[in-house]
Image 1 (cartoon, rainbow, N blue to C red):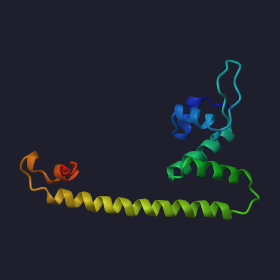
Image 2: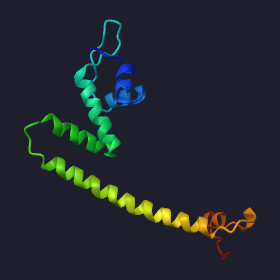
Image 3: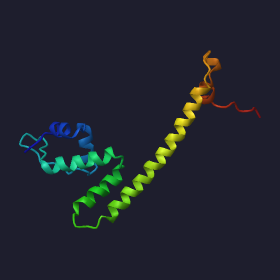
Image 4: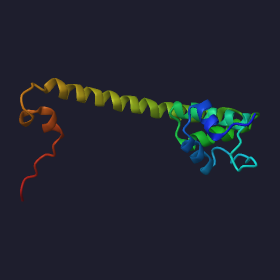
Length: 136
């Protein structure tokens, strides 16, 4: 099976530019080329890109994706490092959820404080505007 970069992208839901980027940064190996100098991808690249996509969909940053790929290449290795990476990522996700919850509450309060009228009287605009600095 030989896939073009477009077919690989379609099969994994990845933009062609993203695939090229992953090759440039070493997440995907440079594929063999056809006689016409087109990239020719096979099952290994399809599997690796699917792995990368799933890890990215779960929010893992590229450095952690790289580490997970390296760990997945060593099938006999203890998975404690994988567990630690996942735990660290979960902690970061929980921190972001806390931040987003606070943001939601703040925005909700702003919207609730809006009583209509003109923009000049808008509490939302007033809150977003920089505070006046005393002259001195």
